[in-house]
Length: 231
Image 1 (cartoon, rainbow, N blue to C red):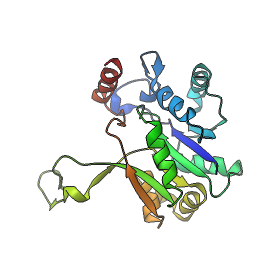
Image 2 (image 1 turned 90 degrees about the vertical axis):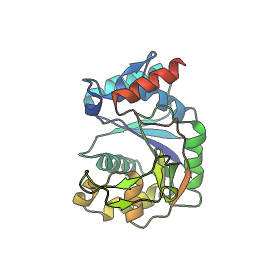
Image 3 (image 1 turned 60 degrees about the vertical axis):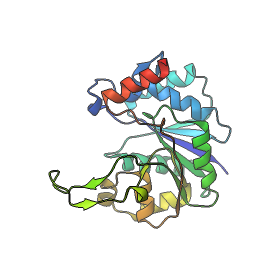
Image 4 (image 1 turned 135 degrees about the vertical axis):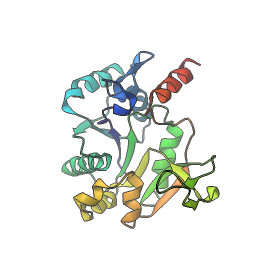
């Protein structure tokens, strides 16, 4: 069974307030994207990559692959209007490569540098018995729903709430077919990879996530990443 890692690297980093997209910021001698690329490349089960990025950054990433001695096959696809359309572009690029229907795609954010080999393997292994897997961590804070941002409109049961992470893994054929059945307008409203799978009736299994596997979104996240590395 072939397994392909889809690395989402099309973000512009506007929330970080940087002219350089967050995934390309260098920390301790490596761009952030290189940390997760090297982890995926070290796993024998990963047969290759689709890296989703703007054309301007392709030479930069190609140099990273050489520097990191990442020799597994790589194809590139374009970012879309939103994250889910970026994923759809990657799936269509894989379709052109005649990827088998029962292959597994593992979708990861380039700005999650602390992903572990163990977590990636949990996601892949879960697809042996389900259409997809989603790593989750428990929610520690009390949660409330507020429709207007000023008052509480509903109480949420913390024990029934989980926070999803990446990577998310899916059976390639079923996940691509789910995208094909959804309209462009509906895909624009999707905020997470598993949301689309759930809405289209795929069987998604939850696996244990990891607290350290956070996404660098804000300046505070970036400083936390640096602190952990230096520690």
